[in-house]
Image 1 (cartoon, rainbow, N blue to C red):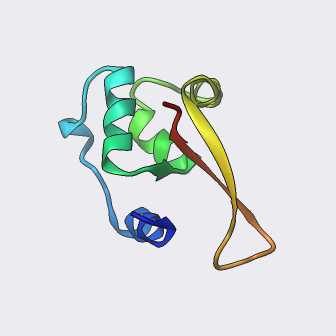
Image 2 (cartoon, rainbow, N blue to C red):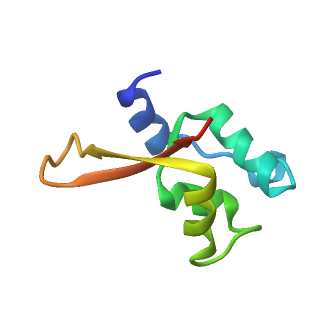
Length: 86
């Protein structure tokens, strides 16, 4: 999967929360099995049952690595994505 595939998945792919794991760690791992990169808003949508507000930022800092990339549609902007740490 390449960067363009992740863009397409971001635009077109939605998971049903009811089929995802019911623990924070298991759900987090499952999300990265589905897609290699997630933005904060996407992660928040799937993790909101477990983590609220700025707790998500703390969780992502501990459990994921952030990657800054140039926005392919607007080179003046940067996109921050989160990837599996290990």
